[in-house]
Amino acid sequence: MIKDGNDIEDPEDVYFNGSPSSEIIEEEEDESPPACIEHLLSAIFISRPLGILWDDDLIEEFLESLGYRIIERVDENGEPYTVPVKPGSKLIPDRKDSLRRVFDREVQKTLLKWLIGINEDYE
Image (cartoon, rainbow, N blue to C red; front, side, top):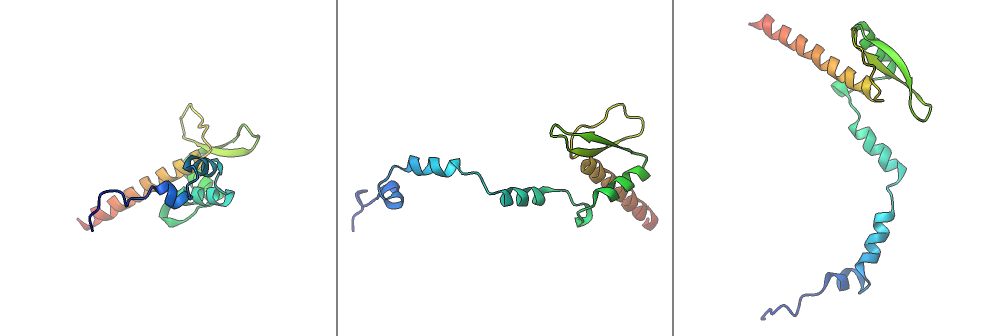
């Protein structure tokens, strides 16, 4: 069998039965993902030091034990959230994820100090 390119079918004919593909693509682009998908994606990317999803009250307790002050702020929708303020800092964070970001960093620093201490004990 000699192939000369005449046996190649147009994908538009095969998949869209000859209808203009741009109409179908535009319809698909207009649809937003369901809310459950958005919640699932946000849950996947939330921080989990040591594989644990920490409660905010425990995060605040840990950071306060390190000397942080916990300040309540209000977002543009009127919803309150808390942010940690480092001792001696003149800036108050305005990001809603500041509590978890600072917690992640402090947990990492604490674990690193602990690991270095263990390493020094064995040398």
